[in-house]
Image (cartoon, rainbow, N blue to C red; front, side, top):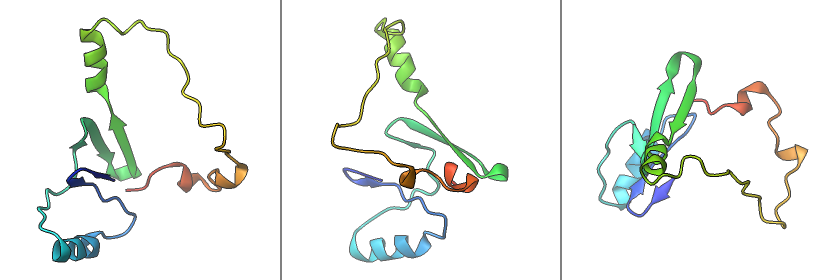
Length: 99
């Protein structure tokens, strides 16, 4: 994931080679394991290989402006975008992001 001048690298394998290649091309600073990006908190549960993302800070903003009791609405995909069974996870491991 890339946002302006920040990059978050996620992979099932070692990302050290990617970091080395990027560092050869660009001036960069490795901040280590991500705990937060774009105010989204990242939590890992290594023993069961789960990754959790939390946007709790945005709930506080909604509360601050009295917007916590608003009626939720769906955000549909564009009409030209079609989901299919082919895109669905085939095995249990594909249903979860494995750290």
